[in-house]
Image (cartoon, rainbow, N blue to C red; front, side):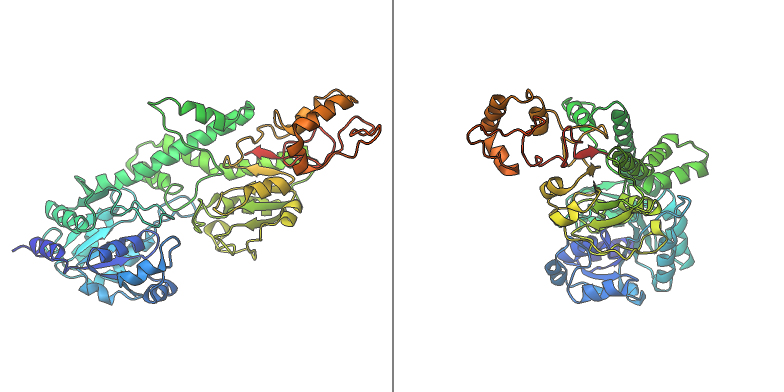
Length: 512
């Protein structure tokens, strides 16, 4: 019986032992899924705190419950010696970018070097990290050969990219189709048996490189379309058009269109990184990748565009950016997670700090400002500030970067002098930086009344009494009393969406 058949038999009998290297947002759900399907699972990670947390039955990953980790019975290790007992080893380590947008595969290389003394005949080694086409062939196959193993005979090399959705408590493995590729037909057969034991949704691929390119294409597709809509946003702002109205209208077409929403830039491990992995490989092959690289440049430029819109909006209100008090809402790269990797909020903070603005932040999931690559590994001494009316009122501007669950955006709107909305949270946000009150708003309708026409004002007040009650009150009219001041303006506190001062007021919320 071949080693492939022996290993497949162990998988089918649930006696195979599974090892997972890298117990983060991709590796931990994978390890849990195999454990929940009846396999003995060992995890490996160089982060000692993460190892201790898992061995204590707790989850180190936001969105994955402690109870699920405790019930799975995982054992986590900081050294790789127990990997020799594993029949399949699944590698889920980061694949970041360097300072010049070049692929950094040291985590893959170091993982294979750590595993090398513990590789043995009969094992399957699967790479799950997102990377450029050729990586599995360039790294995994030589590692097996150096261990004296024959790929497809003594050992089995696979590529099966993760498709995790950080913040999703259920994970995607087991629900989303899983790509599987093998270095040889025997490797693919082993891979299909291995992953088929944990999910019924498999997509066999013809080669390792085809699977690697598929994973990149999935993410580059999003990056390119986000780059396009970010460019459409900039054009729409120049035309004084609401980009969200345009997107909403376009998606009424039931074919040939898929809506993407603009934002302050890209974040996370995959979408900001993968276009550059593909472009790097294309350059190595002498093939142009202009479209992919252009999308990367457009998205990389968005934090600077946001800061420019903020600066110009402050200028229109007579406030200089230097020394201005700026509150950032949301440091994480997307809602519902504490993950700040490649978050555009970090770059926006850097640009504002460089311009000597006084920056604070609020993010209910990020209690302390993290050390990041964008800040050269440094962590500013900042903590998330409680979101209170006093904090908001003390700011020259509030910038909405990531709309985390739990942020009270009604409170923000009621108390902030200026809100710069990068996410479309406020759908009536002004496009013009010096725009007055929104069409049909209370201030606009008040200003449309004939001056000194007490009867018209009182009729208006009667129609909008509940609104007035929420924002102020009419002064007593009494005998001959008038609700108007000497200039013909109504004695009301400023309506909720607009800053104090004589009308016409600036719109309180702008798009960026």
